Image 1 (cartoon, rainbow, N blue to C red):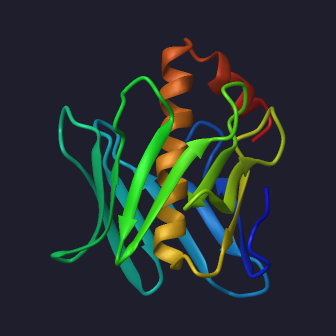
Image 2: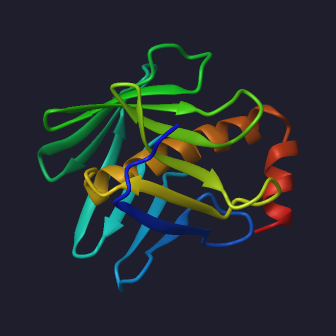
Length: 172
């Protein structure tokens, strides 16, 4: 597995001990962002100063979009509801976001069978995470990929009766 040498590293911290919302900082800069989930739906927002993006979900489908105003910045499709796998497109690029292994919470960002980055918890018992992606992927799209990853973590915690969520809370 080779990863592009020009990487952007983002540090993702839960906003509180029981929250799935995150604050994100970019290493070696003053850039900050936040990821927020709507309480009752699989939608939310991404704030990357000075821009605000909406994450929209088509109800009862596996389709999400990252929108800025009336413009779709990126679109994600989850072709199979039983897998942790997304096809993501933005501009002329097509990416794949998939779990690294069925036994971990780490996700890989791939393009044409090349690994362009990883999104993973800092250790097994925390929701703190890092995004290490090629700088060829636009920053809002990197954060959208993280948003989709957290959605999978959140679903897993909800479906396991809180067992994974409890582990994540313990290591905030």
